[in-house]
Amino acid sequence: MFTGNNTSIIKADPRTKLLILVISMIIPLKCVTVFPSLVFAALLCVMLFLEGEKYLSVICFCISIIIMCLYAGAVKGGFGSVLNMICMSVMVLIRFFCPITMALLLFTKTTDMSHLISSFQKMHLPMVFVIPFVVLIRFIPTIFDEWDGIKKAMLFRGIEFKLKSFITKPAQIIEYTMVPLLFCSVELMDELASSAMARGLDSNRKRSSYVEARLRVTDYAIILIFAGFLAYMFFIYQQ
View 1 (cartoon, rainbow, N blue to C red):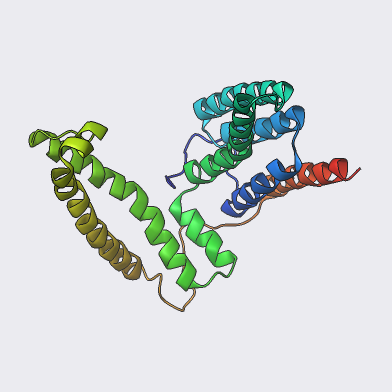
View 2 (spheres, rainbow, N blue to C red; view 1 turned 90 degrees about the vertical axis):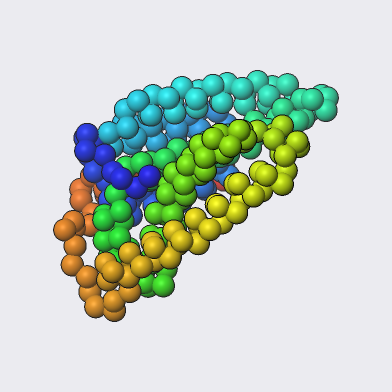
């Protein structure tokens, strides 16, 4: 998460990816038919491919096709029965979150933290927002690593983290998982906050950076394509 990719064909600015994420939240509200949804999914997959996530882009596009086929089948089935209604409701939710998930993957998988902080500075965002955001982004993958360590320690004590263990040994599960996880979380937040302070993120002075965040010709082209698609959707569905 937020490590970047060295095999990318193009390197879009984080602000461009943030705009794509916002557009991905709006498109499912306006686009309710299969073909435009697939076109937008293809655009996101092309972005993933160009940013170096070739394998992930193919997987996302295949999943999008499957989801849209199932969605079309659910719509064709209508509301004839309770089962059809449930299936259609589930597919509508999946179709809604599919482009948002792909845009989020594009943002997190292909953006490194240095470029992100530099972009935040270009946007003149206050440090009261930047510091908690950076700490949060660093916190999530670290806490997952700690959680893996806790589960391995539980196995040494003969306790597996399963539903059966919650039922048969609830006190031990809470003692050996929740308590260490809470203590780890508190310590991690303190360490990450101290690290952010040590890097001078709380300073009011303008910070220098090894990387320069700026919008290039490719960024403007990408913004034009995605904004144009959004405008087209608004125009079509207002007719």
